[in-house]
Length: 231
Image (cartoon, rainbow, N blue to C red; front, side):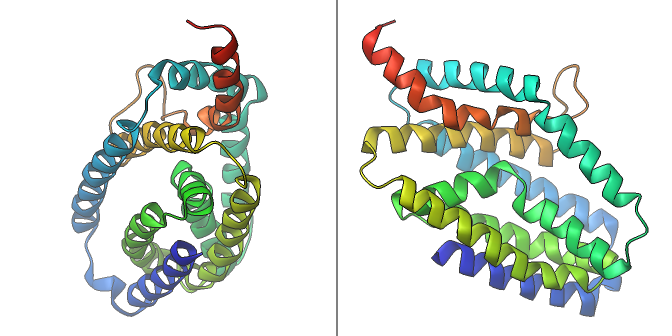
């Protein structure tokens, strides 16, 4: 829970700074800062991915997970949900709260960070995410107002519950599986890094990160099959 508590505090501090000083920050500065965040995310994702001892398992899990995510329409459903909320007549504060929660909680880094914190008791990734959210929340609050500040409580509740769920599910889990889950999360982090840098996925409007998330659930099954059918 250390990572979630840190993330909660950083969102609150960043949003407060954005409300107080946001008018002094240019969009050019924002773009440059997000390039730095993207480069750093690529570095962290690479280090995590290199921990794998079974890359073929990660590959198969990603392919099968993406097939499942695409069939279920996870990415398109999330996009429609986001667009409908943006077009609603919500107040400025509630709109800021909703958009901040979407940014801070509904992403691969949140899932992987809570997984590592819950399974490995390693808050490192959530500490990194919290530092990134410190910057993001400042720029977001400068644009959308006080609702971004209230989203800190949403981060506490959502990420805290997710971390506790992973901690409960991970009791007695094979340490090698936990390592591979972390490595798979690193590959998803690479996608986040490229997205932050504005690098386009070939033939797609955005990186299909939401559609790839089922890979985390399918990886244990792929490893079990691999043990019975060596390939």
